[in-house]
Length: 197
Image (cartoon, rainbow, N blue to C red; front, top):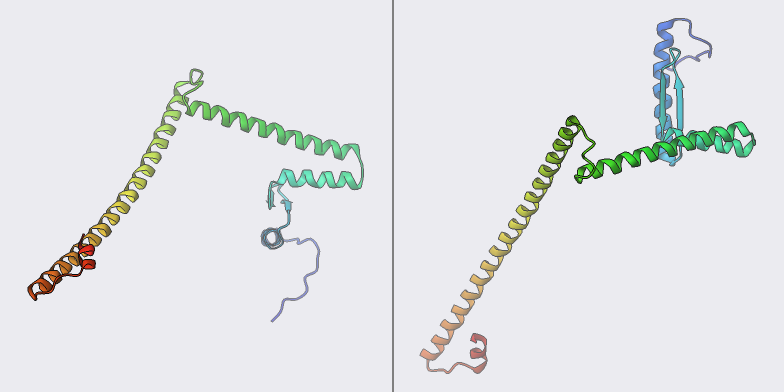
């Protein structure tokens, strides 16, 4: 039993409209995700609900995709305003990346014990917790590595002991054979003596 044809017009019932919006929004976002994965394409979907709430999906960074869109539009239709928008977006991204890099560099210096004189008590306690956590992870990893190496060495020791036992048995067999030969009055062959030595 198939569905009837839906007429495309505004749904008057608020509840039905909200349910339809929710279902179709999820369908569009899912299809955008599938298309980006299957075809390895760059996609950005922006949806604003009637209440103004933003829903979005992007296969990469939304801002970069929008900047790329504006640069393409600027190439197709040269317009100072669109190129300025692209420039503004790119400049904002660059500033954000610079701030992020500075923050990470400062954090690394703090973790190395440098430039900590400017930190307050709260920041110092946080840094101390991070360092303790890092040291504990390092110790845990070190214990695992040492344990793995110890197990490997024990296994190697067992193998060598087993090999040694086999060689001692073989040596004893050869000595017994030589003794049997000498009891029977035969002299052992020189090659046999060489094996023993």
